[in-house]
Length: 267
Image 1 (cartoon, rainbow, N blue to C red):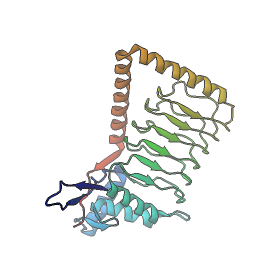
Image 2 (cartoon, rainbow, N blue to C red):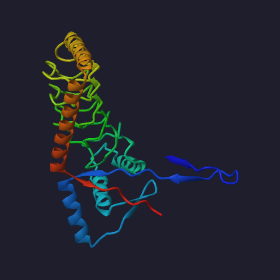
Image 3 (cartoon, rainbow, N blue to C red):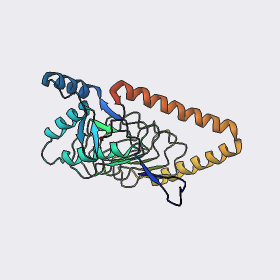
Image 4 (cartoon, one colour):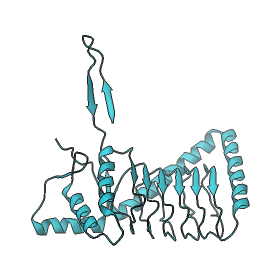
């Protein structure tokens, strides 16, 4: 929530509520096509649909979420997932979406463009591509055997602990600072680690990687010191690498998802 306090007028301060800009929403193309077809067969709705949090959903989103909840498998609390998704949309682009501990087997087909996504403590075996602006991704204690390529370009913190990963992706963004990959099936570290990486947890894997992680982190630290001394050329190269990562993430996302603009606020 944002509160704007105006200058005092006649010693009476005025305030006005400024609602946050609602989050864009990513929807898989195939699911969106199915929703549009269902709406056309039913002859509507074509108007915004009231939802939780005092918002109105695009009718395509409402149809997709209705289907998502209806098709829940045993043990999945998709109704709660839907409510939290709608709340995150209403809260805007700075929101944190937690779908932790809902017994989910798959990631919902509707993901708001939030900065933090918590999918921990579920039964998810595969991650789709995710919005590029996500900075914190928590997927601990699931059933993951691999990670999508690429992961979000703005990612800073990644928790994939307590899964079944045999390897970590080579394409983590250079923005990543913290990775927790404990209790997986890792046999080695990636050939390439993010330049900004400072914390790497890799205990309880198939091979003891603790010393290797410490050695790699020390080399990354030395590289950052060198870059700081080198000054502008190193900084320019790092910015270029980050921009390239962002473009690649966006291109991959656009190939699989449709971005639906912010929805209307209910009166």
